[in-house]
Length: 151
Image (cartoon, rainbow, N blue to C red; front, side, top):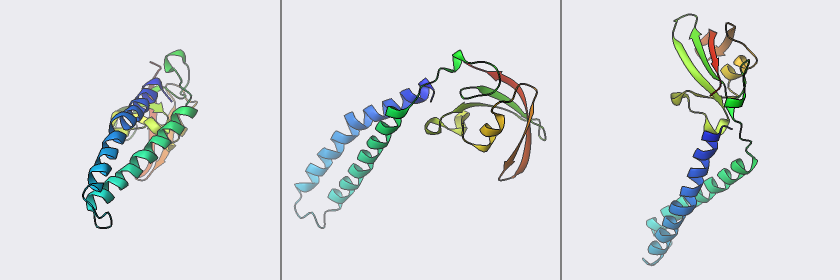
C-alpha cells in the first residue's frame, strides 16, 4: 500500500471512531426515548447504521494492521507496485496514466489501478517501449508503455 492510501484509510478510521460512532450511539439513545422499540423505525435504522460502522471499523483496523507501506520514490526500473505508467492504446492512440496501487486504494477515476487487475498484472515486469496485450470485457486491447515513473 502506498503512504497516501494508508493515510486515507487511517483518516477514515479516525472519522468513524471519533464522529460516526458517537453520532450513532446518540441516535440510538434518542430513539430509545421514544418508547416501544419493536415498531420504532428510527431505532432500527440507527442499529443498522451502527452495525455498518462497527463492521467498517473492524475491516479498516485489520487492513491497516497488516498493511505494508511502500515508498514508490525509492523504486526504479521495470513496472512494479507503485509505478506510475503512461500507456498508449495502440488502436485509438489514446494516452492513459495509471499508478499501480493496493486493492484498498484503487480508484480508476483517479488513475489508481489495482495491482491485481488484469492490466496491472500484464504490466508488471515490463519496460518502456514494451507492448502488453490485455483481455478486457470489450475484447483484447494492446497498449504500449511510453513512460514509467516512480514518484
